[in-house]
Length: 160
Image: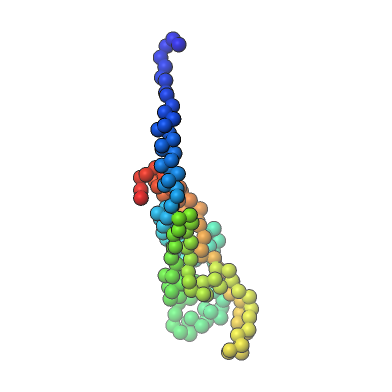
């Protein structure tokens, strides 16, 4: 061939070795999922602070009866779901080899995430009003680039 050229040889053994190393790293991705869990936990904390669902939808406002009850106790009705910060502070990640769970072990967390309809409390003989869903758990769009960075760093050996 006339002119200038560059020849690149494929080193099959070196490539196979790198792929085997990569596969070995993927056997236990706990460090990756631990980091992703922290990212999601911080994201969920922001959802509380911004009074919004992970998709950006604002939470339903407090019912007038809730606003009045808080005012009667001298408490602010400004912050939805962070009245005493118990639910917000209970969010934690649990990393595993192939996934991560982020959530709360507080039972009323599900009520706020999914909502609940009108119901009767037999113990106090009272009908309880519906509570609208105010989703706080979830992945925000701006979390994905961070996930990708964490995964790439792990797979290239830049971490863990």
